[in-house]
Length: 414
Image 1 (tube, one colour):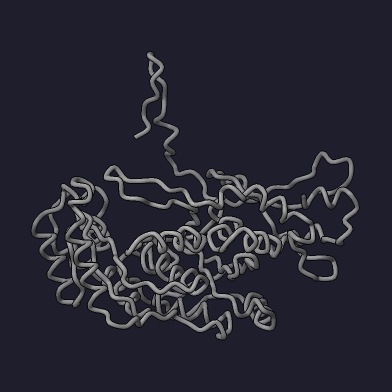
Image 2 (cartoon, helix red, strand yellow; image 1 turned 60 degrees about the vertical axis):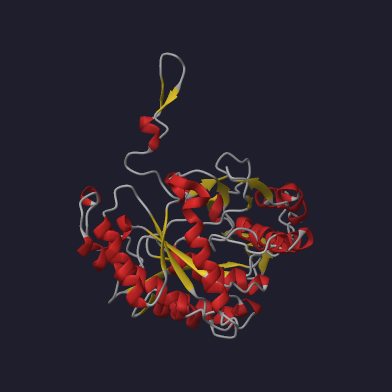
């Protein structure tokens, strides 16, 4: 609709050089990050654009934060697609696109009720990734579940540095939710990896590496405490775990003052998570009053919101940010956008922006290379490091091992 509007006279004076809205597609293709469109048009409407992966699109974020159909339509209309030649924001509503966008999403807005093998109900609805978006399922699904059950468990993205922080600071604040407790899922394998063990050596017994890697888990636990939410550690058991490694992990959690429970639901279903559920209920019951609070107030300037998360959650020394972006944030502070929460796009593999910096990273700065306003979703996105909102395939993609045998069976999908 943007390019069609340009073709038919550009009545809202959209500047083709300042179109910020990108297409969305649900696959990995690095060649689509930057493209030129309109090369075969009989008029000269060529301009640079590109693709985001679907989970990074603002439409996904809006879908998961909308309270109802009317709210969805209004939020879609507030999407900023670019600038006019005079510098005014041009929105999806200016293009008269938000009505048809809402029509496409109308049926999808109803949560999907599914069930586990043991008939436990689950609402699966929406999927913005926490490394490039806010990492939470829909507000509608969560509020629906809260009306149907005594306890509701929801997942929040990657770790407490991305998923939990955005769940608390964005979704809970936006929807008026007050979480009663949190569960951090840890594995012996992951802690050994953060303790410096290579992937090929993870099967070898190494309780000392678990202790070194506990620095990463301890930081997640410290971060959750900053939101005033009590926490339980769930150790997701692997058959390859050694008793000495689990014992070391349980001892470290006990020393930190956080309950730790072994979970074997991967093998035993609900029975394998009963101890975890019991401990979570005990933890909730012990909290007589809620101490939950977001990390920062909305009145704080945008730059300071970013700096607060970088220092308090990631433990960066400071931001590494160009003066032009600082000016851009200052200009946004003078508008209603200045009261938005911030959503940091960052690698999930490290507290820093470097995915190879394992453990509890220290002595680093957080490089902010781009600022994007998600006016419909109601937050400001900061892109850090080399993170891309349209991923590429790995060196050896899964497609290399997929084939069809002589009987017509598809093989190599595992």
